[in-house]
Amino acid sequence: MPTRPTLAQRLLPLVGLLLAGCSLLPQAGPVPYPEGCGSFGFSARRCAAVVARARESVAEEPTLIELLQPEPNQIKLGGYQLLRVVFTLADGTQQVTPVTCIGIPDGPGDWVCQEPRLDLETHVDHDVPCDGPEPDDCPRQIVPDPAAVAAAHPLHVPRLDIPVDTVGHREIKVGDVTLPNGYVTRVGAQVLNDQPDDFWIADTMWLDLRPVDPARPPFANVYQRPLVDGVEEAELWLTFDVTEASPGAVLHLADIVAE
Image (cartoon, rainbow, N blue to C red):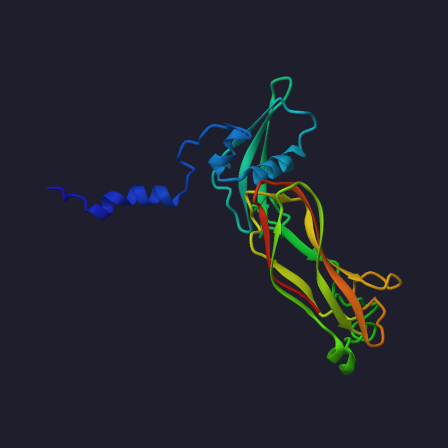
């Protein structure tokens, strides 16, 4: 008399199907853009960036744009297919363009492979400019004069809340700082709400360190900017462009420092 299969034996084919991925499951049809962005879990901003990347491969203006699930089994070492964009052209032909992400997202500006985030940068950098083999042709580490360090006044702002309820260019003075010999150790801040849904800021926000003396050069690479005796006065400004705004919207920054 044949033995009855155990529960584990009966579940084994189902487990194998799950492990094999979705290749044996029917693929859903295309959904219209932009209405179908939510079915992929994308915000409107990210979805637009995905379609814009795919649009680069289409020579003419499409009459219809649709979104399609990725091809089965397209997750590979180091990358994966995000989705496919279907462009219908004027003559009725269709062009299907896959959008692929490889590696980790390329910083806050990579809206295709991650949800958009606000980006905050500064013009100050500490890259060592070498004209030849290291270390002989590289500048020495800058060590400010101890007396200048003692006389300097760094800028530390624990928190800054900025209303962004109107569209337009903004320049906000954060505070004053005196720097030993004009040398900048660091400039930075933390954006607490870097994925807002009630406002948006185009491109990059800048923490702009500006010399008070107009004869002094802008702050940039610390090794290429001439030092001064004693301390140098400077102002820290926050600049950005608001492109989307709503009543009561606020940008929250924390741990602002210039020293």
